[in-house]
Image (cartoon, rainbow, N blue to C red; front, side, top):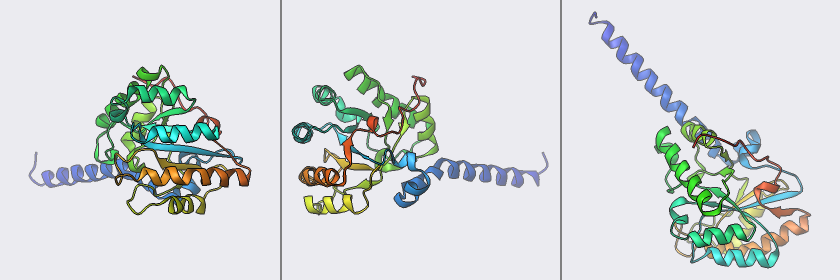
Length: 252
């Protein structure tokens, strides 16, 4: 090989690496809520205009999740719980309690780590492990997947497709993970841009949040449900939201 060809090959390899990195990271643009809600409504979780999907992340947590279950039972409302596999194996009875109460279980990954920093194989194993854990504990395979921090990657999209999981993010959140959050701030933040067909993100655990932050979400929940009722919106899980069941039968 002629010496002058080597720099050209090196440049080509560098260009290919940059292109691959850009492709892997491209879905991160969907993290920006206004852009996602406008251009990617299904990924954002926009469903039936007369319905609001209520979702919770980061559980199950024996120190907090039961309080949410009690309130939801009192209000006769079902929700979708995006579980971390690492939390589920610590509280298997609570996972089954959530399912037995009629709520929908979904996948939030095994560990709460950004999938953007993980390759396709690592992303696949993370989601597979979490999906199979929930399925083994409840006898039902989850349909939905939400990445930690809401950050998607090409590898995460591919892994979800192979595993029969449909990614869904949110249209409104409560910013309930900070130490500054209160029931009032969570309610105002959620309802500021909530509309019929929206998907609400709250947290039923503080395992990745400020200690005790879950209390702000719990305190805001009754007013949020009252707000939706006043608007004539039904509140329920994603399975009733009009998004479809998602692809099934992916590789295990």
